[in-house]
Length: 125
Image (cartoon, rainbow, N blue to C red; front, side):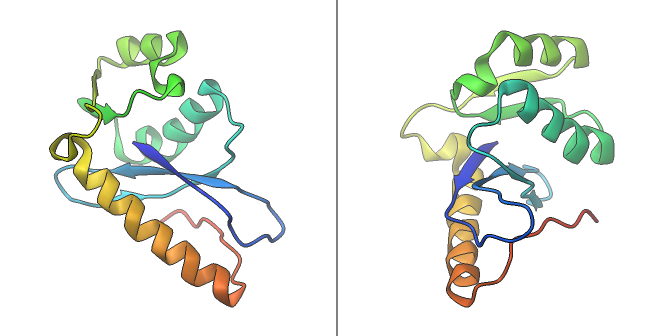
């Protein structure tokens, strides 16, 4: 898990970031829009609604060492769900390289949308 930050095209709902969540095995990514200012609780709710609610509880989550992922709230949530949390090592692309590649792709898509003025919306499904 990691974030892509804007600028995003502005529409009815103004988002300035999106959470990048990639399934290691299927290589399928989800990109729910969010805000840079979201708290750890907001991020957990976003994760719950977009991953746990639709796909089930993951066995292992790999993320960077962002304070939102290392907070006491998240640690307790992982413990309650029985999920193992693994942090990627800085400058070690083999650990979280898949998410980083998805982030590069997402940033490229966002830049192209911005150049055409297309509004960034999230459709579940």
